[in-house]
Length: 344
Image (cartoon, rainbow, N blue to C red):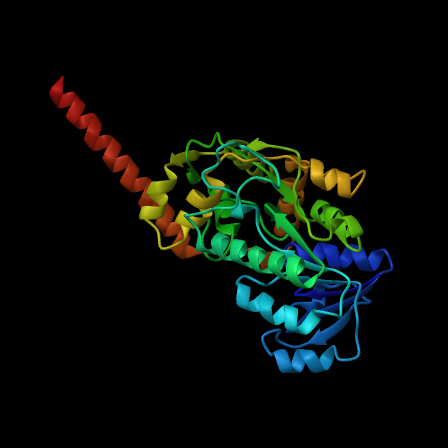
């Protein structure tokens, strides 16, 4: 199989690239070349910014592909460009959408590919929906051979899968655990969530590549395992060899008190209980099942991050913000307790 990935070095796509090359497929990567040092040998790198349509057109002028996959398209205009570049040059075009595009809040916590698409909380998700609408139009009217893939929370060994963290990533939460500081968990921590390791996601994704039955279809790729946010944080703390000191905070409060987009990432995504029905994926890719349990995957992440100091990026601003939120909650609690004492 001859494939072209636009991107190919991110959290999701790196594992797919590695597994494809290990299986002996021919892989081209179209990207700016910023993170190619971690790729397995054997990939053909087409170095360009995909936004430079003229340059990309010249690079692929003599090439045709079995599969083209765009991992870094977020708005319809980018897919309009992809259509101009790849219509007639690929037997399958895979767009990486998002499971956050599903109806929020959900009318039924069990998600299938037939669940409506609607997310009033997150522009990112609404843009992904618009991208899907554009591609389906091209499939219906022009026969453009599209497949839409919807990942949920997919993580790799480079970063801990968390809901509340700063702009610099998740390391500071682990650092706070090591320092025995309180850890913010959105809501009461009991909502169900689905984490999928990128190695598992890659196996499902590769099973859809070159799959005639996947043309014109939308498919999510997730684990069947559902865990709570409390369990996720407990596993991280255990892997670090410390006791979890959790502080639960309403997602709406976190959104109101932060410059981070918690309205989108929490209210529009991680604050909601989600359980995925993967029956469609298993019909398209017989034998697929996610093999890496959450506890196993998180322990892998912790071991990897601790062994790689370059992944331990301090975030003093997030750390101070956590302390301020916790102090504000403690102050409010003390004030209310004092008032109740006065009443009594």
